[in-house]
Image (tube, one colour):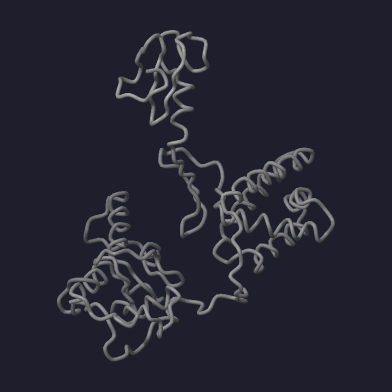
Length: 328
């Protein structure tokens, strides 16, 4: 019947009415051909179909990786026109710049326009970004975007700088809207990061009974020591953490691009990048991708990883940790 939902083909004529089904959206009306999005024969036009499907779409808008804002080329090979805001970086920059501008009694877009072309104003802006007003992990992205627009402003006529600053402000505000402010949990912000390196969470001497995955001996030539020798990682002076599954992917990608054979070690720049000294890579459940500490020649223990996640040694979450079968 008209207005009822039935198991019918996408376009069905029922008693002179046209019933249209699309992702749970039901349309029932006369077959007049004058309704928006409905063709003369009752078909769904492209504009109507897009409207119907819109509620079921999820858009991923990209953002910032662990090494800063995306740059270079897109996955399709097109050269990126500019670094991209991440929502968190845009939100922190938006709040910090507005506060600084209003403190000087000027509109924040005027403040940015001056910073793009005046050295003194630019130095003042950089100082704000490098302060605690912008979280440390967001500063690289903020400075990359602002530097890009500063270089563009230097090449344009003076009469266009204000419009460029307003365009930058709109993009910043639009991206910041994707990262709404959260209510405070009542903990004051720290003056700086502590410890300054992930190695601050690692014990030089493990406590008795610590849960840690065993590493094959150096003499076996397998496991972490095998990769370490094959890639000649002794060239890297810094101590840190290596995730060998991800590191192997990067080395294979380099060999495929460069045409190097399997016996050629990666260049020193890539070898250095494989050793993480400040921030732990994202944790995964893969057995081959656990954190291996280069200076100590062993994997990180469970309680050390828990420290990096913000858990105290006496946390109840660690009461029942013990060596598991996969650690043998």
